[in-house]
Length: 341
Image (cartoon, rainbow, N blue to C red):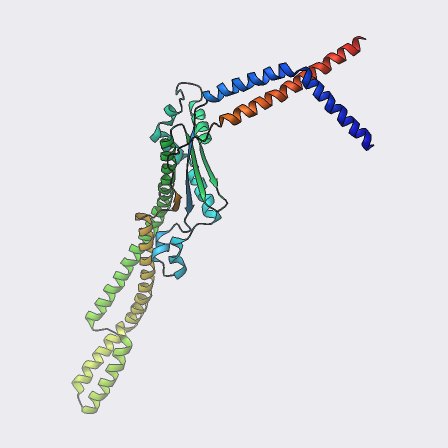
């Protein structure tokens, strides 16, 4: 069995060599023609230069959490690189319509790519060109790579750097929209709590104007003073103290209730104030949401096209296609001759 297979392979190899020898000149001519055509075509393709930015997302998105929180672990978040979740979020932002449209408008990419605005589906072609020339990808090191291809090396670098910068402004705009709503809610609660505390403070002030300062302390002190006055026979003093006791009996319970409530409301007001200040910082201030490892610089050498590779692949593909086509034609002719007999 092995001998038959070896013989068959040798037969097929010899047939192939005979076939190539018989069609050597046509195949050589076709291959040379393909090489010339592909070489000319490759020179018609404009050179494109590549520039890229490498960046890491940050772990935290909240300035107040990173800087104002009392937790030790939160303070270190500002220096930590983001994880997979933050990388995916950054990729989504980079691929947003807002960044794409701002880059298109700034660099006039419709004209730059030579797209006729009055032609068919100009924006479809524009977006396809944009996606073909601008790539966003996650690297194996959990960073994000922005690569831009363009005929002008300086423009490729500028677009890449601008996209990286726009990622911050877009994310800040998204956060600001949400934080503004949160700030409006917390501000409303904070101001209402301030008014409530002010009302309680006014009540305490009024009670003090009546002579009611601290029900428990005053009761203890006045009880001792009344007993001492009675021992010393100072009935007028004891009578004045009795009047004060009547006042305490009338307003003492209110003073205790208001004081207890005011203490609790001070605590709640303090918590609201802390949250109010944190949300205000998040609304008014911003920090970069990324660490830029490498900024884009104009490339010195083109990345595309690789002309020798285009010529090689085109020539080899044409050669194989020619061999296949000629072999099919030969077999078809042999079958016709066989059927004719």
